[in-house]
Structure formats: C-alpha cells, structure tokens
Image 1 (spheres, rainbow, N blue to C red):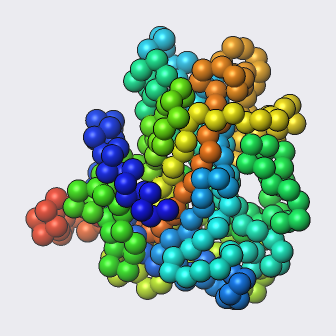
Image 2 (cartoon, rainbow, N blue to C red; image 1 turned 90 degrees about the vertical axis):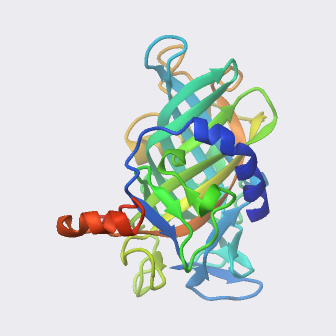
Length: 342
C-alpha cells in the first residue's frame, strides 16, 4: 500500500499543485505513532495496537458518488455526495488480521460520508474539494457476507451501536512528517501543502488510479468502544512535534475508475441514503430531479473500488501574539495553531 501511494503521489503531483486552493496555510499537523483500541488474531495481539499506519486494499472497499446539484452554469462546480467503506486489513508496524476489541469474530471497517464540490477539468474528469464529512470505525459480523458494491450488506445501523471511533472532516491543513510518524509519500520536502488536502481527482470514463488526501479529527469514542477500556479509541503516543489530545488521521485514498456495481438495487440506494442522512443530516440522493437522482449508468454518478492508508496525526501549537514574529522567523513562515480538544 505504501509503495502504491508513493508511486501515485509522485505521478499526481503536477495535477495536485495546479488544483491547490486558498486555505489556512498557517495550520500544521504531523504524522505520529498512536495506539488504536483494536486487536489482531494470527498472531494474537490484544488491544491496543501500536501503529503508524492502518490500511485497507482496493479489492476490499468501494465508494459511491452522486452528482447532486448545480452551483451555476454547465462548466461551474457541482455539489457531490460520496459514501464509501473499506475493511481495515493491516497495520504498520505489525502483522495479523485486525479485528474488534469486543469479539475476534467481528471485522473492522472504516465508513464515511463526504460532501464537496467538483470542478470540471474535461468531458469526464474533475477536481473535487470536500468541505464537510464524517468517518466512523465500525465492527461487523464476519459471518455475514460483505460486498463493497452492495451497501445493503455493509451492516450499517442508524443507531450507531457498532461504532468504535468517530472522526470529523478537518479543515485543510499542511501535513509534515513527524519525528515518530510515518512518511507522507513523494511530496517535495516531505510536506503536503494545505491546499492539497481534502482534495481528490475524478475521472469517470478511464480505468485509471486516482488519489485523494483527507484530514480527519478524532471526535470521540463510539457506542461499541469497550466500557472500562481505560483509553480512547485513538491515543497518540507521547507526540514530540504536535500537541497532546489533538488526535486525527490523514487518509490517503486510491480509487480505480470507473467500475460497475453489479447487483446494485433500490435497497442499496436506501442504505446509502441512511448512511448519509445519519452522518451528515441530508440525503445521498433525493430522486426529485435529473441531478439529485442517483443513476449509476449516467455520467457523474459512479462507483469506484477504493483502498486507503491512514496515518495518525497531531496538531501543532499557535505561538502567543507577543512571540508570533519570532516564531515566524524561526520557523521560516510556518505558524502553528492549537486545535480545540474533543
């Protein structure tokens, strides 16, 4: 997964640089080592897992995107709704099949809902900037058949009783490789500019690999997090670059385009609406007009196979006003800010 990420980040750098948008470039976060309250089998490793990366492969995940609304004319950005899922299949540094801390027969999935705008760059391509979203880590019964192309099999329940951890889409921020964290691919100087985060390239007509970088803040434990665990679902290990209690994730996504979601039917669309409505308080598709309707056979509505790698992060501090000038000089223009704690 890391090798794939490096190769694609290098290939995509030019496109991403062109697509940078204005953002709060003063905010910075660092990759970290964290404890996740999960466990593995074969070999057995009781919770928590210490990791610099969690990952899921392309063949174990998928995402659906609905072009939802216009913002102007035919060449202006459009509002898009995206729902996706992937099985957490590995972690670094370590090995073993990742399972629930509650039951070794329960597998772990990351499920998310995102809203953003897509700006056309060609007849079947666009750059997407996501502005709101939520991700949840859930445990699912491994005895029930999972199909990434069939959301009705994803074992989502709107009571959120199987949720272990909750994350909110964070503002665009610069990302740097931390002293105790993983590398961040092939970006120059080991820095991902803020304008390249919460961004993804889209191609709906060519079978290529596309990529996105997304930032999430840890928002708290879910209802399935074990009572008496003694720690949160994610806790960073003594961060040296960022602040304590500012846990988050940077997620690198890899999507193949396009792909047919064979067997998709009305029950699957209902599941997508249930997920999007529960997490973001609106529908994935309203079916009230040509755009709000989700039609997987039409340009602008599509399914991707989806893989990811996720690195824990922390946020850095803002200097006090009296020391701001010195801080800016000493760090060559890099300002740091304090994130509110969850």
